[in-house]
Image 1 (cartoon, one colour):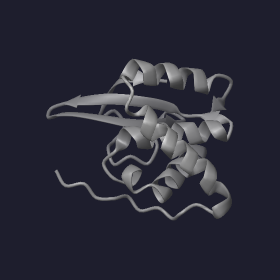
Image 2 (image 1 turned 90 degrees about the vertical axis):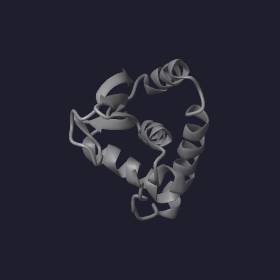
Image 3 (image 1 turned 30 degrees about the vertical axis):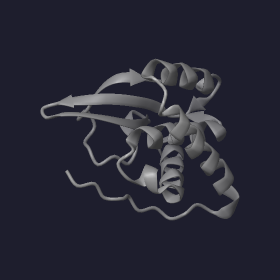
Image 4 (image 1 turned 180 degrees about the vertical axis):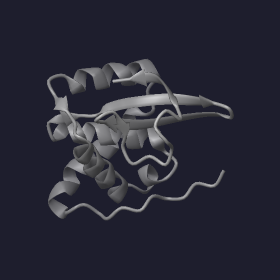
Length: 132
């Protein structure tokens, strides 16, 4: 399967430091075992209001706009960075990891207002196995 980079405008200069921090942190967290990722994200999300779809979309676009890796096939750091950036802004989307069985595929994404945020797959395509 061929993967293309998502296109997104770079965020304004004043927002970039937080976006870079979220991406760097996500790249480190993505190397941890799944249980540790869930534990860290569960602690980080405490006290945050639910993210609206537009809030989560802005965060995702900012992440994709500064990171070539997150704009490509690395869905786990992209989803973690999006969730972390939302948290820096006072809200939290639902972070998920799921699988599709025929053919097998795994994917990570964020949801807000009950729907996946800017994903190429229809809602329900992946069955969630981890959620925060």
